[in-house]
Image 1: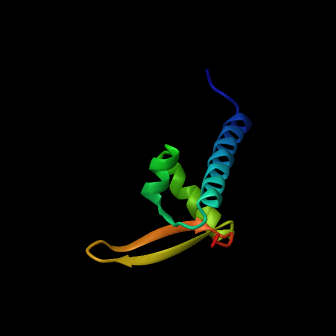
Image 2: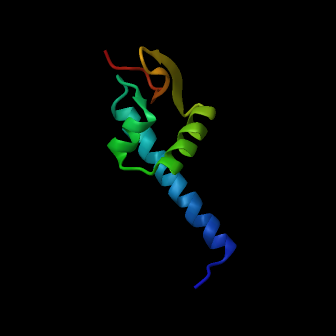
Length: 88
């Protein structure tokens, strides 16, 4: 049974918002660490297609920090971290 375009958009927005909240909360609870996309996907049991869009949006809006790190034998890897100050 088809749904309306509005219903479709609301479902997509709700899912995006839920994943974004999960990511921000996870990173804020682990603010002494930075994680790769794969590590976040594993820790939060998220789909690759959605996590990439969410991470891009969150980093572009300043909700989280993103940095490329040159890893030996791997190359550039993007890490994501809370933009809250680390605890010491």
